[in-house]
Length: 167
Image (tube, rainbow, N blue to C red; front, side):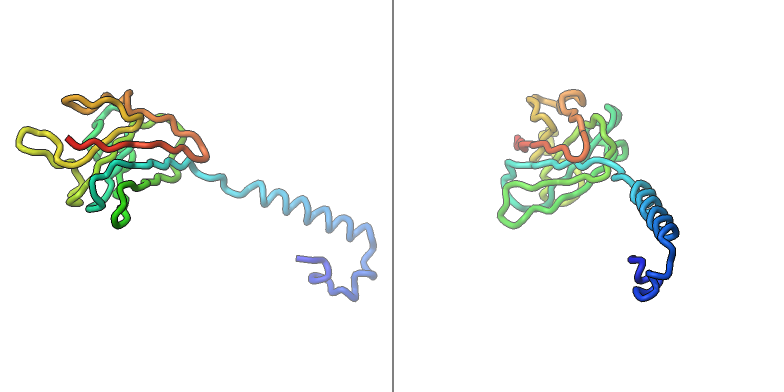
């Protein structure tokens, strides 16, 4: 807002300069204080680029864990888990988690082809859907350790790549 809006342009010459200077200083100081009190962003952004999909059916299910507890399949122990749509005919997708506090997180992704929110397995427990982990560690007969899939998230943005595995 301008001074002329407050007092009318034709009346500015009637206000003593000392009062105008004081008013200007007050507006500048108050304006600066207001801008300093703006809320800071509440966290970081983690972008998880997932590639190697065998088709574009279903969604990418992604979960992040703060500790080993529940790693990698107990979603009740995950910091967050969410589906990400796959574009038609795409063989990759990007899952995004915003407002995440900086720190270390274990990250897992699955290609949830039937959208049932879990990694489907056959009768001998071999996964029927694609899966992968941060840092793309070697996967033998079981999931890698939490430590092998930990990512250090920093602000403003951390980007990682996960290549899916199909058994």
